[in-house]
Image (cartoon, rainbow, N blue to C red; front, side, top):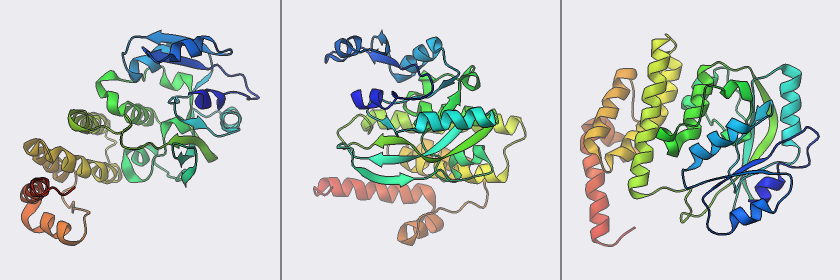
Length: 297
């Protein structure tokens, strides 16, 4: 957390750093209240969505951005994005990101990928960056909160709702965000029931957004193609525990794109093509169970 906070300081533009403690018991609250230059709030284990909405409600700036406690902003990014928005009167300034490990070592850099359809971009056409790399004009989000009913994928829901508003966008050429990648023991990775809930939330986001696009006559073939790139792996993950629901997702994919073909190569791709999704997933479940029985990972 100290690194995340420090990365928001030392700017030429005036900044307001709001930190929400979600009921910590490890001394974080005491540390926060001892710092200077922060606005600190506390809530009792309500989760990220409630925390972010609470902070947004008191934010007094023209712009906002959202940053997790273990991520950091790149030096100069705040001022560079602020100046871009002020110069071009942008609603949103997008940027690339850098992945770092737990020690802060750079793992990979992903530049922003130029795209002439921001909605298709964010639906899955190409890498959509990370919303903590974005600087939002606050008025753009006046009716777009973080939604607790999509808590595991709230950032994805927010940025897709932003896309529906057709924001004026400027592009920052660097890597505004340093996004930390943790080992599998961290909460960044959901497992078991949490992972199942995350998959269904992700699916419901697409149901909601595509329905809104369809109602507006804006669900074109390009946006459908972008969406099924995400819906297909979601169907696969859902099939692990809920095969009937997964079959329903696949039927929807073919309704959206009748000429859809499974993207997998080799034997797996051949199986999906020849015997279909249901039978292929049954074989995969049998294989997983067999590996468990004989003790393979």
